[in-house]
Each structure stands twice: as C-alpha cells, then as structure tokens.
Image 1 (cartoon, rainbow over the protein chains, first blue to last red):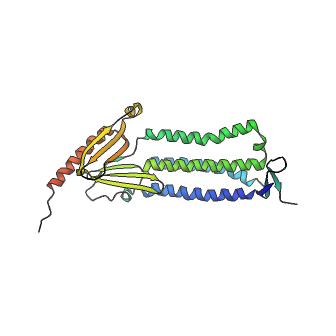
Image 2: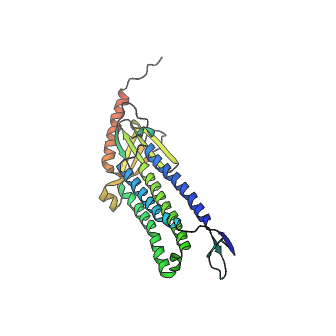
Image 3: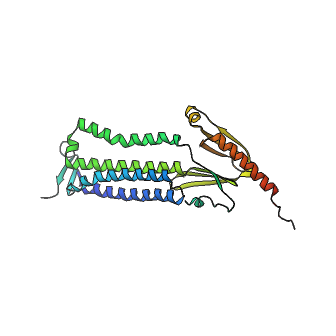
Length: 88
Length: 185
C-alpha cells in the first residue's frame, strides 16, 4: 500500500502553470521582438489565448470544489486506488 | 514593426519581398493539432462507456480534469510554438540583398545574407498537384565563389519571385560595376 497527499497533484499543476506562462510569454515576445506581430499573428495569439482561458475556466471550478486534504491510496485492498481523509 | 531586429536596413535599402512558406503547407499541422485537441473528448466518451464511476467520483473527476487541463494547455503551447516556427521562417528580398531567417525552434534562429550581385543563377521548381494549384514551390539560388547556396521551400508565386529576383540581381550588378572604385595609393 502506498499513499500520497492529493494536494501534491495541485502543486504539480501549479508548477506546470508557471512553466506554461513562461513559455507563452517567450512565444509572444518572439513574435513582438521580430516585428512579425501582424493581423495573422494577432489572430493566432487570440485563438490560443481563448483556448487556454476556456481550459482554465473549465478546470478552476473543479479544483475549488474538492477537499484537497485527502490521501490517495494506491494498491490498497484489492489492488485498487482509493481516496481517504486524513481527518480522524 | 521591428524588422530591423532581424536585418539592419541600410538607408537606401527597401524591402521588395517578405516571403513566408505558403499558408497551404501549414494546414496539415493545424489539422493535426485539432485532432490532438479532440483526443480528451474521445477518452471521456470511452471512460463514460466503460467505467462511468471514474467520472462521477469527485476526486477522480478532479484528477482527470487536471490531466485534461495539462494536456490541452500543452497542446495550445506546442501549437503556438509551431506557428512561430512557421511564421518566423522568412525570406526577405531587398533591392540590395537577400536575407534568409530560419527559426529552428523557440531558442534557435539562423540568419543568412547574400548580396544580390553575387547571385549567379536561380531555379524555381513546382512539384505536385497541390503545389501546382496554389502556385508555390522551391526557390534555389546559386552563388558565386565559396558562399553557400540558398534554398527556400514553398515560396508563393515562385516563378514570378525568381524572375524579379534575377532582375534585381542584374540591377545590383550594374550598380556595383558603375560604383566609383577606391583610389589606390
């Protein structure tokens, strides 16, 4: 049996979001810096931004509605995955 | 616009062509990313059919939503980066020189220049059904001396560009022949 805090997933997700933001900013900087920020580039930038925002808007309510103070138990009885509360 | 970040434009120099690969060549990449972005929908459908409990239990649902979010944001990021590779690959033809900008990845770019008067010969090739319909092809430029040859793929209206390039090269050659020579001491 192996268990880890469910909140670890949230931390990993936060780290991913930081990396995502850094690379997105680097991309936009490239387009601006090289003078190729035209209507086409602006349109693609808007499409990608809206796409990313929609994904975040769909994810955030799910994150907010979860009790992250639980443990994920791997290979528990019967070899299953279960979620157990740390609370006594 | 800061094209001067890519090429330091001389006072008398004007840009005649700013060429990117034909947009048709980017359509397969767009389609690939659309398919990749739709994969989670297929996975959700399969999970809903095989083990619906995974999508109803709040914690496992949250886990799948995080996976979905990471996957979709990664796809969006890779799509934007691939657009950048396409959009920043440039062939700039001025009345004085030819500049080829190759964006290999996000942090790797090469810029090659060639004076127009050094162009010896150029070839335009159009191969294939789609290339013929949309009139794009490969432009190859042979240079004098030990300078490397240039090649640019999927140039729109490639034959017209080659003709214009050769005419600009001829004008530049005349200009350099007539230019006053430095006085030898």
